[in-house]
Image 1 (cartoon, rainbow, N blue to C red):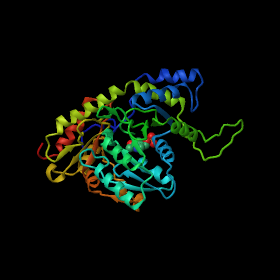
Image 2 (image 1 turned 135 degrees about the vertical axis):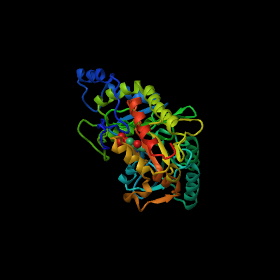
Image 3 (image 1 turned 45 degrees about the vertical axis):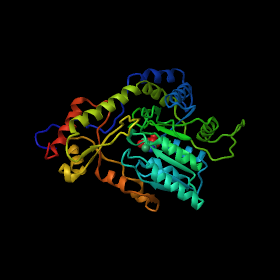
Image 4 (image 1 turned 60 degrees about the vertical axis):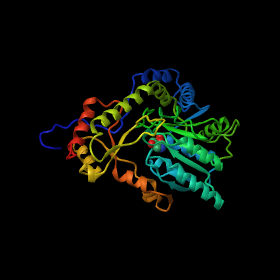
Length: 383
Ligand SMILES: *Cc1c(COP(=O)(O)O)cnc(C)c1O
């Protein structure tokens, strides 16, 4: 802490933001004694999420990771299979591939969306088809709330008959060409972890238009109990369903999703207005025709033009008790995935080297945002 500066309360990257509508719905769950991983709030929240994402079916689960795990099982992924996956993402996207004993093949980002490069995917799938070993699934991510080029990615996967999973964990409320994130691919997943745009404290959802597949997901998520008066099991199951109490929180949160998106986008606009002119500082682009929820405001700092590097800025913010983070470290650079094949890599490596995420909560005050802005400006000799 610099001398003479009083310590402010910690400013987080993204903290839970309750609306006030949660407690009455939690009380309802208690009054009806639906304190279980099923109940009326679970049913209602599933229907409301399906409507929000223009999907026919939704299964609420204990996490986004669980949703990805079940999506991969439903795509038939088994030991020895390959799954193609965006490299620039959180580890939760890729870990379920390993749970199933399958092999991830990571694919680089494109500079325009920071997401899975459709050209590289196209080439990789064409080469795989020639070799006669197509992946069992492709996972695309809408990073930081920015939609990937989903229409093109859907077409690529369809051309090769490979199922697509859209990891929209960070992108609820975003859209591409007017279609909501979470509506693309054979399956999509959402997360309601505490740091996401809306939260149930922890939880996730699996979405699809395939009702049979979603019914199967619910079956697997409830310990794979066969219909019988006793406990009968012909498959390995999981305990993956969401609590009715958590679903109550989620329903109240979903009602204010529009406000949360507007607040996050306002953060981004304020940062861009105040910092956008600084040399060497570039904000995460928003591709034409897409609407990002700006879950996190992200930027890159080119040290030769800005005057110092990303780490110097992150540490300066940390000195003022402000949390900022480097952009996700790509999966192909992670020790745990060092054996994995990588297609391309320069774009995501550059984004990791130069990228920084600023505090972006929908409950952040304008005064807090101004503190962040002042510190970042101070780090640039040209400001
Ligand atoms: C948060 C997140 C997940 C995992 O969701 P959990 O609910 O935390 O398991 C998966 N993918 C991405 C891109 C995420 O940001």
